[in-house]
Amino acid sequence: MLRGVFPVLSTPFFSDGRCDARSLSRLVAQVAQAKAPGFVYPAIASEFATLSMSEREGMVRAALAGAAEHGLQAVIGISSVSALVSATLAQQALHGGAAAVMLMAPQAAGADSAQIVEFFSLATVDLNGCPVILQNAPPPLGSSLPVPVVLEVLKALPAIRYVKEENLPCGQRMTALLVGAPASLLGVMGGAGGRFVVEEYLRGACGSMPSCELVEAHVAMWDLFQGGDVPGARAILSRLMPLLNIGSVFRQSSVKRVLAKRGLIESAYFRDTNPTLDPLDCSEIDTIVADLGDLMKAFIVPEEEKDLI
Image (cartoon, rainbow, N blue to C red; front, side, top):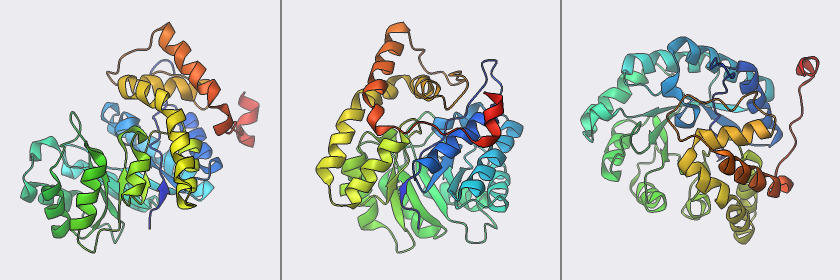
């Protein structure tokens, strides 16, 4: 069973816009160092929609190699507007040792459960029991499926073992899913930047899939919650909220600023159409990150990279 914090890895780019697989490997190593059970790649926070097919396949290979090296569970995102493309990506994930694949319903399917079932069936054919995660995200990339539609899809496709629910109000939707779900559903996870994570855990979420810049803090919250220290988990979330609020506006612009400041990626370059930070935004982010230093572990440079620094 997938349980705990599975951060969504950003796609690192060099300053000229090329994909940076070495920095992606660093992010995987940091997930392992933070003692998270695994990661998600690529998903919305990975700017997957900006990647060419060859870029996507190459970066997924790097992520899967890192997962194997560090003993992590890799959840591979296979979302696409084409079921055939998703099926190709799913096979790469399967043969690369992925622990699960994650798929969003395309907006073209609307809220028609029959069309969504058909899409998922085509996209996840011949997965030999590899679990499927239905990601239910808001527009522009997601379809924001109503809970009754998600439940219909789950009942029609028992291969879907998990849901990542990140439409508002996330907590209430999670409760409705868990109450109405068939026995084939193993769990529901949250996303939405991790802003509602404590409430989601209280409602029975089996984990969370936030962005990756604060993975240690998210693992600490999960561990505290599992140990019965809900006030302790809530206290950490309160400290993170100023940065999570900035991230809700600037998204990868903010996430990559933090990752670059931490030395985890070479460049804060991003491709998505997110707002750009100005100097005061950068200063505020840097101040908040410095205040969170006790929650963060310094990145340990792998031996093979030391001669490159």
